[in-house]
Image (cartoon, rainbow, N blue to C red):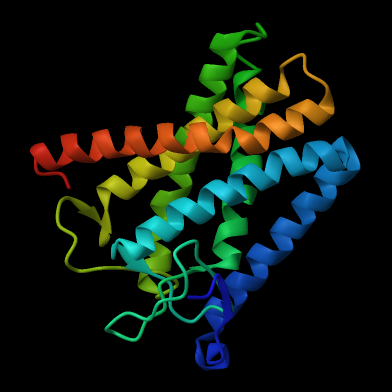
Length: 234
């Protein structure tokens, strides 16, 4: 079992996938550099690393569970190791997808802040909740474009065996998952960011709290899936 491996056949994939990976890399590096310059190294790690960890586990669970797979990328990661399935597909998540989730969080969270602060100015827990809701909503809006486009171009492929309501071949429950993930990660980030702890303690809490936040995300998403299954939506 391998935690990380290189796809030797990447050169055989289409140009659009290559451009997609390059775009993600440029955006991510630009955001990390911007955060480092504006907030410093500790806050930058706090903003990016927890989401990378959460994304790795959640994406690995989705791939290992047979819901979708990512063919043709360069570098793969997996907390479950690099097993090869019966269809000769690696059970792993591309590194570019994992880091893309951290770019999504920082972008969507800041957009949500910018929008909400125009209509609600009180710096309190309700503001944190509303910012997180807005960030989750903007995440769904983004994914309504991104996921069908990615599926059509085979950047990631949803399995045909997945039933329920679909939007351009993408299961409806996937968009719920986007909202849940961004909502909870935004809330955790804001709560830690606005706490009165020292920067060192904030950094430590942001990393260690992933275990709690991750459990909440899985429980919430699992409960919604059960509800959707009961009404035939999933």
